[in-house]
Image (tube, rainbow, N blue to C red; front, side, top):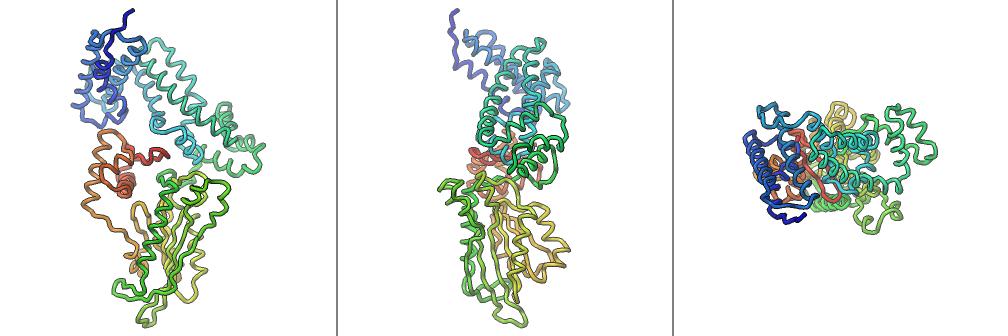
Length: 492
């Protein structure tokens, strides 16, 4: 057999098909007319390819290109069916073929996740990820084998499904094998998934905890989360790396100290500033033997600034003790190099309790700044009537989300309202609106936006992340993070 094919010509013909496959299910966001145009273009290119326009290619290459044409048409057919649109040409695909693609498509998260990303997500107990792994170990291998042996399904689709699943499987297995060496609980967990997929949480706990001793409490938390115990708020909705956290800490503490001159004026009131001092809030030395020297230098210390503000004209007004504190989960940054969750009440309560202990005759003004923001339960607690009745006479609290610039306080707190301008971060509204439109345009075109693409569009990393979180809250998009790629905004 003489193979005289023109590979460059074949690549050119198959390029529109590859673009459709890369968009996947998000192709349904395209207008009906656009998708019909893509269908006709891909079908015409397929006819040209089958007519020998590219010559005779090696069998493996030929199967690869044929599968890309058919899968692209299937993706488009799926979009017509999903939106209940009348396009008879797309009915060439069987229901089981469409369902098979949907099943594999669930795992497309592994397209943008590296092996290390997978490890991070498992360690961070990402429920969606762990659900996929359970499905993978309990069901997927046998399902894939049955599917590719189904002679009634077209050969090109079976070829694509096997190839794509092989890529995902290789990446998953590499990550899991390394995790199994580093964290011996994972192998036991996987065996439990395989043998007792329907076993109750209590039974799993009793069997798994044998031999784990010191890890028993951590293991229980992992099992509870795997089985859907809803105890986390906004889990996994943020993504801040260790270096970013340290940068936010330096920026917040430095900006605060710069604003505390000898005299300040706020809302018409003048204050003398005394006793400005900076302190570390966390002992990071305990991590020195666990992490590298570079990571130690990047580890946030939850530093805080204290200052005494005395009104120039007292008229019965007491001095105000200001405490501006950077708040983060230092243990997570030390263990994983990343934190993906807003702070919860269990994280914030110690700061409030300490502030109440530190006040004497002064009133305490407590500013808490978090790189991952605050869970809704925290914001509701600070803004609620109970906090107003029980705490405001002693402590005023402001919450500052360092990534979104969101400032939260109690609506009845006049002291917090007066001083909030010291910490509000101003952003140009027109710049934000334009950047938001640019990022949404990319999202509509590709179905997802990487942080580096958003930064390129708007020229500002912090603004790009702020828009990501804003679109998540406003339109229900998803924000996901990977160590090597960073944040990714994903459409509905």
